[in-house]
Length: 212
Image 1 (cartoon, rainbow, N blue to C red):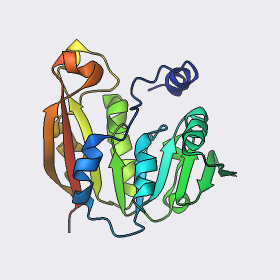
Image 2: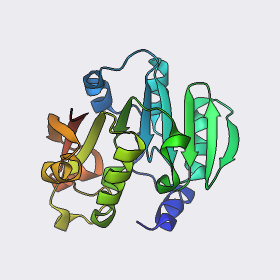
Image 3: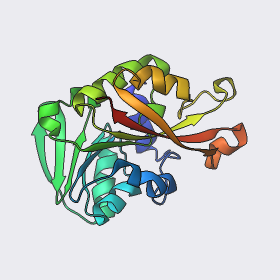
Image 4: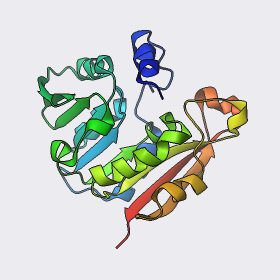
């Protein structure tokens, strides 16, 4: 996906993918990650999701990556927090109590910059990427987080009826992308809400645990 597409969506406030409240599937299934107190969770392509504020309220530390600096600015404004901002190579790093967000190309983020991650919560990253990019993304995310456990939310629908994003990512594709490194377990499969509801889409939750 051309970065200009996402920059334009944010600058024009065309962000129908942004949810006005915490994602109910996160609240229902976060316990699958078995997070210890002060665990650090990574949210790739996080936008200004309300899920970050909720995770912080639960005593969870959060790291995020987001292409649009505008989205990151809005995230911290919504949280009522003024971050410290530094330049880390190609990325702009925003930091506040318990929260670090890297603005820029996620593929420029390295394990050393990101630091230790206990788990990944991917609600809107994998499904935001076209098929040609998803293999590269999955490999990068796995290396970036050293195969940390994941809570992954995807949509599945007839792609011929809707060009995306969000794109359709089937369970078969999740297995193809992550099955070599993870054991994969389905946690939920329910009708999608919002704009995808009319396209007979389902919303699926996957729990990925690293293979021993």
